[in-house]
Length: 320
Image 1 (cartoon, rainbow, N blue to C red):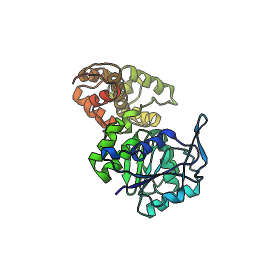
Image 2 (image 1 turned 180 degrees about the vertical axis):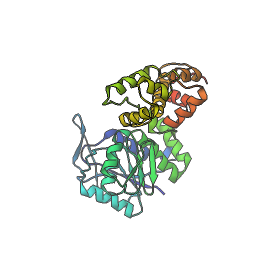
Image 3 (image 1 turned 90 degrees about the vertical axis):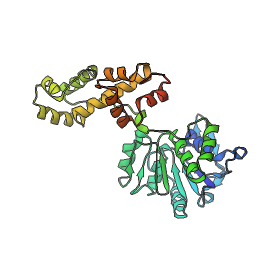
Image 4 (image 1 turned 45 degrees about the vertical axis):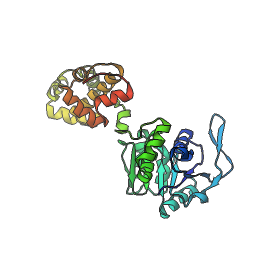
């Protein structure tokens, strides 16, 4: 049962990420039937001010030793350098050795990686840091398509707000949906979000070494709504279909059909956010033959259906 929660602060404190953990576990909501968590904010230098930014500082009253026996220890986001106080890493290992859990928010996953807690485990972090986390900790299985990951005693979450999702998940797992839903209602957030980080990430147009391919990508984006085949594209480049496909992968990193589909999904996202067009018309303008095909590719790429995405990012009331 999750009863005691510690938060480790060190270096420059990520205030919002710390606030997320404090909001879920640190506030007294016993009047709503939420259990009172034994909440401890600790640092290697208890009582000393820790910088936030803009002249703001916070003070952690507890020592790291007071967090070694907690049920859950949380690491808010922070530096991605891989250089952390050894006593912080030792505390994370001690909590796991004592049967507790570790929660990281956003770039807090790097501290767990430095402690050796991500080796052989699936994990996540903010999508901007995913490649770096994988490079620094090659034994970790990094997945930046999700909002949070549970793997054994380690729960890693993506960007800042995903820390709310992960924290509520841990409450739900231990205390049931009623308690988690009560906290979510007080925070005015959904008790559970569908989808993952994919819905927040745009697919940039790559820079091609070959000027001809760069011009071709620009042309493809302008003509997304047209029925363009790989053979058509090969003819524009004066190549055979096989040679074109191979050269395209060399320049762009994926097949022409996959790249075209990704760009069409991205265009449909923009239309769903900025217009009230129906899904059929969004599909037509994005180059999908039907709304059914759009829904298939959109849900596969983004993690949620088109209208769910629209409700989340635009609040429009288009109909299918």
